[in-house]
Image (cartoon, rainbow, N blue to C red; front, side, top):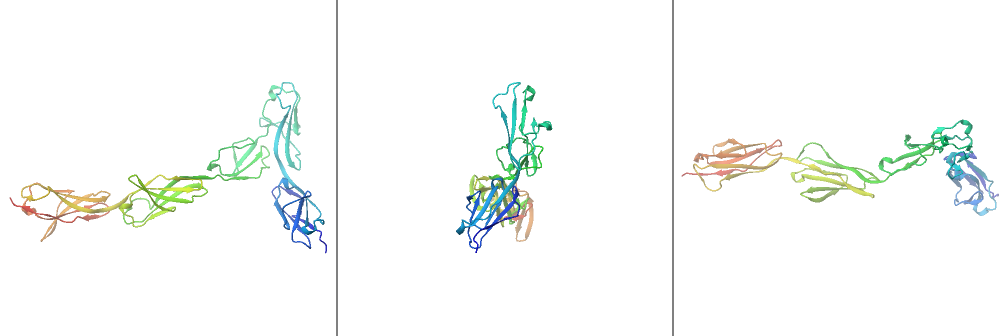
Length: 384
């Protein structure tokens, strides 16, 4: 049984394009572990398959052997990775000051496979005549009009759309708006763009806000949901809700949504949320929750208090808690014979009270949400 290893390339292409997947398969009849070689030097991989997306550094001569029979390696396969020109630069000779009438040579250097077959020179982003298309561009007698920028211009793309920068380096202080996919190409060679790199900008929460559902008036007894929204990368990990009452802040609960069922007037107040990820936290602006309710706790007070004497002036006043405020007050008097309306307005005044004004009085307080009656107040008028 032969222990000599066999090496196969999939696909069978000794010339690979940059970035293409390539698989080398080693086989031997007497081993399950293998040793790989590149240009005669061992690699760390010990599996049967050697797989990679080809780049220029992967070019070379590959062979393999069974671990137990390193003396019987496979025949070598040479991988030739093809790629467009990269790392292109211009050097100037002499490098010191350039004096009028002296000779100057510009040399264009670039890494490519196959080697660069044509060069185009530009001055101030304008192509020079095609006869000057060699790797070197020599100015025999430098004159003032030769002054200019001979380096190539570049075109940059973000998410496939050109950006305004034309220099070799695209530099910025990253913000969330800069996230995206970037690539570049040499001007006039836009058909040979670079591979794209993705910029993922991380940032703490921002643009944090609170929305209320349903919108519009909030009536006591209904259900309300507050939702905290925030823009962050990575996503918000924690939301915390706060209610502010007379300067005292209390933590209500956590979660992106805060629901209040059977809401009451005690739930009125200013609410805000805090959004937090591992880069920081930020508070939203506060929203006001104004719970509307019909009048309640209605009561009648008498002025002056104490004994009421016939002929004196007496005022009954109706008080009630309501949101929105009470819009109308109605006064009623009742006795053994029935109930009838005696007036309207928050106060009911008797300028010259008589004995027949004696009886039980109560008021009705009303707003757009509903109405509520006070308890009765007994009025007894004493004769003189």
